[in-house]
Image (tube, rainbow, N blue to C red; front, side, top):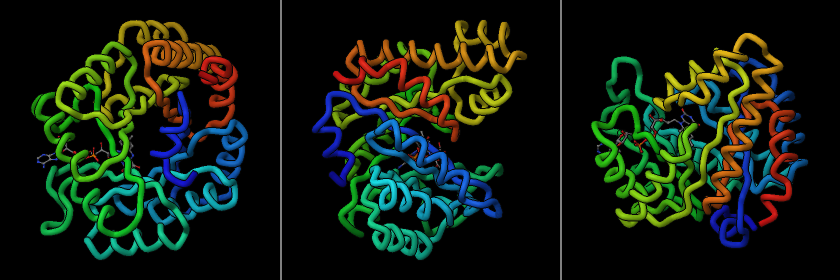
Length: 290
Ligand code: FAD
């Protein structure tokens, strides 16, 4: 099955992984090895992130192509638009087609620190990229959503109105920003349904295995740490192995609660660490059989 939308229809529960390309001058071998390891756990797809400023973007299609064509695992190629011209995006879309990549996560990317749009007259928001992909080929299109609201938006309801417009441009599914409190996701899903957003939503799960890294990630993403996780970080943050074990256990509990409450898609931010994905998959192996 080439489209993620078809995979979702055929399964009770999907589990997928996210990986990121190395810095531009670093070799691709290690991330290819990571993808190979991850593919052994039979994920429903592996997504490959895209460097917003063009930094690691050149490698995204190469890695996604390796996943799709060499590992025979469905690839989801991320693509951001705000720092590109329309001509540059058209070129990447042609590369995706040439590499038989059928699934794209259409993203805006973060604005530069001055908050200005870098390419006036080109892309401002992800919905424009969704429109472009829709008319450029036969793609299954995913997009991002934010259970706690996108950091730039003035209110959660305004963010959901913008999300609705993006979905109506042709999104097939959504993946959430990381979150640590499942009740926040349940409230968000309720709000989506009440606004008529009915496409599948996959829950983005970040195992907290490194205290410093998670503080940086939460600052960047706007996701908040809850008291339960803060206690774990206070207690184990300076003991790397203990933090890893506690973080994996927290992620596993989060996933089990989500599935028990009817969430059907789990997307794991692996941070290119197959051993963490392996432990999570072992702990949920019977649960995800449906
Ligand atoms: P949009 O949907 O365009 O929304 C951005 C902001 O604009 C929101 O506040 C929204 O409410 C507002 N908005 C939307 N439409 C309108 C409108 N018509 N008028 C006014 N306001 C509007 N970044 C990367 O660089 N590379 C990646 O690979 C990557 N992968 C990601 C994967 C996931 C699952 C997630 C959740 C995020 C990812 N990001 C990635 C981060 C993402 O690029 C940033 O969060 C970015 O700031 C917003 O992208 P978006 O696609 O959600 O933008």
